[in-house]
Image (tube, rainbow, N blue to C red; front, side, top):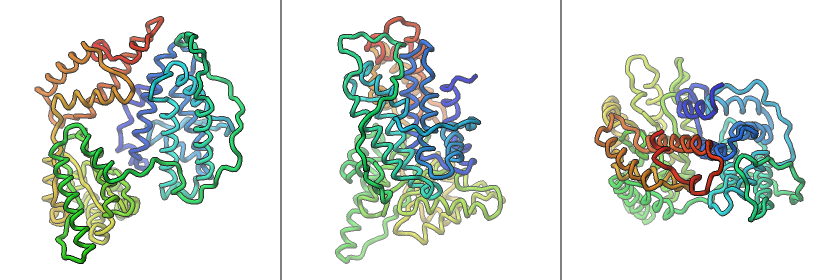
Length: 480
């Protein structure tokens, strides 16, 4: 049997496959699931005596149960699609489960881990788990295909119940003086709790639990604190200033020059293009340029169909989803293959939508510099509407080092002294021999995940594991 980690890591970025199944991947759900998977992998290394069911398997089963619990109809199809899009595997033949009144068994285990092994840590496994379920539920409620078949009241009640459970169990489950040996954690038996009756009904999508909307200044601060990208920050800030002044002139009745909001992002993979696009979508909303400010990310597979007439329908669906926000088209140059390819039909549909919805629809196209320049030159309509290019340079050696450290910090981990020295030398050689279309930040993410897996394999051989060993990445983890 293929190890769950190998299967998940190998296939999770196959977005073309996802789109071919008829559903685009929600980037927020994907990122939240990645973080949850990494958390499970880390926790599995602690409980390595094979007396416990694989934590990731437990999580996936609870995700199935959660989907069934919040679904009014179509739960089996929704679970199957989740497997195809986010796990890149076929749905198990039997996903039937009883919708229990207790909290998910995974949350019970994570709560015990937070109150014992991870006691005192700022990052909580329970928070990672609940955050993912919240993102998944919100994605269904925001989808025009799913929202009618999702019970928003049930969804909200379940999230509240899980939050309440964590709050009720925030005290340690073991004595402070008691040593807990690794591999001896048992999933606690479900306990009865007095949850408040009469949870308020959710009457609209705005009532769904979500993060507080960020202010313009908070979004600008996030942009400013991104690692590297100095020229990008300068270009974006210049665009923001132009839009601000245009709005002031409009409000005062003065004539204003047209400021194109559509953008071209040029750069290799992993240079922060999607991250910046997401920030711009929020900034545009705060400036009053866009009504909603959502970012809908697609590629060729999410726009182009295989038969005459279907591409326009498929593309129109994505445009409707992005209306009031930004349609972000990655590797946009793949739409212009020439001949009888249906990509041109997608381009024509998008150009018409840009013309018909000038005030409430923005398109950002992104891809490698060379192919993107050829793509824009291939169509006069594209050239005239996308007249502002922003170039995302490859990260420097020091910036790549900082990105790796940011992954460590996100999970409360750190590099050992010799590990840091080894990484700096490795990055120096890597940057001197940088391959074409180097993956930049994604390379650091892959390296971090590999180091975490190596660390888990190394620590699993030890009888006792100290906190320092648990949270330190060494040379051995980077070279294994």
